[in-house]
Image (tube, rainbow, N blue to C red):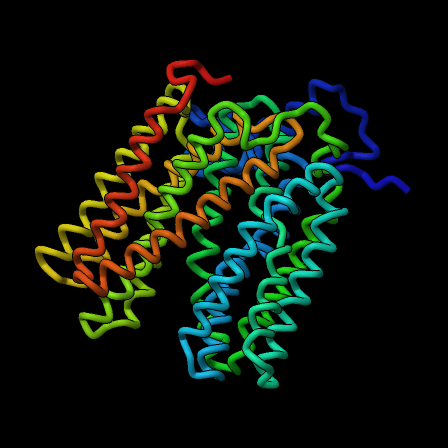
Amino acid sequence: MPQPTPRQAPLLTVTADTLVAADFTPRGGPRRGSRRRPPGPRRVPRLLGPYRRLFRHPGARAFTLGNLMARLPMGMFSVSAVVMIAGTRGSYALAGAVTATGLAATALVAPWIARLVDRYGQARVAVPATAAAVCGSLALLLCVRHGTPGWTLFAAYAATATTPNTGAMSRARWAHLLGDDTEARHTANSFEQAADELCFMLGPVLAAFLCGTFFPEAGTLVGAVLLLTGVLLFTAQRSTEPPVTGRHGTAKAPLRAPGMPSLLAVCLATGGVFGAMEVVTIAFADAQGHRTAAGAALALQAAGSCAAGLVYGTLRPAGPAETRLPWCVAAMAALLTLPLLAANLTGSLPLLAGTLLLAGMATAPTMVTTMTLVQRHTPEGRLNEGMTLAVTGLLGGIACGSAAGGWTAEHVSPPAGYGIPVAAATTALLISGLLPGRGRSMT
């Protein structure tokens, strides 16, 4: 039985004009100078407007929620493994060697997993690959728990290399949803970079809390559950999944695409910034007698990058990305001199933390622009593979930067170690100036 609408008078016949007047004219006539506020939500702040429009696309919120849940453990596993192994085996050297082995295995396996994702689809590949990685994490947990030989730790942690690149899969979905909308894709890439920073900022904190509050294996266990649950939720959103490309046929491999080698070299140098900054900051805080404060200082750097990424996503890109990238890298190199000066001239840890916050603000624009170019230069149908190669370059740079920063901090001094990130950023700047297609407009 249909219900009467509001203000309906069943026993009175009215015309359309009187009904409109009854609905919209206040009693006693309209007030002079008054203006009725149109129905609907209040105006959204300008900063949130582009993101609100972004998440109006059907299915965007659902796949983003699952992806964020799956991405958070990426910042948890290394810290959890170090705490778990060092706490039970009493050796940071063993813990570091195990995590380094996992990093090397990921660099080798991740592009292969991404290629399978492009060829057969996200759901068909990501779910079994994640299940294999979760089994590796649980195997590591059991090996540590039961005191198995050291080589089993290496084997178990290497098995986690099948973890799919959830960030790349999310960016691929945005590229599929947004098509040729350059501004919306810029906002989406900015959001994804901010999400990366947020997860890598909160992940270590959550891992340290779980391992310290409950038991050493808690961080690894919770991370495995979050990863599997998040991937299942993410891949369940089939309406936003990019279409399967099948066999690549004559499409070039991303490594052979014009411009990609230079972009991957930029990623390698930028990763050197991240790796060196982390190790040198820990060494500097330790030399000041406040090693536990290093985490807070690095969290400020990530927070600055996260905030800058969100703001950058609301701005309209000016000019081609090939032209913007050198400027972004130049800003990053310039701001990285601030921690170098603060460490060498003042030796103040609070002042250093403030300069890290400022230095982090140039990181997200650099990464957003780099990922935009990676998407543009990657051959059609191989987007996941191209972006995973970029992440692999970052991981390789992090490893090299960690080694160089650690050696400088130990053999020269921790303040001098901040010269390594500046050198890495300068290298990225020189390489970015050699990118092909500069001055060509992007569509």
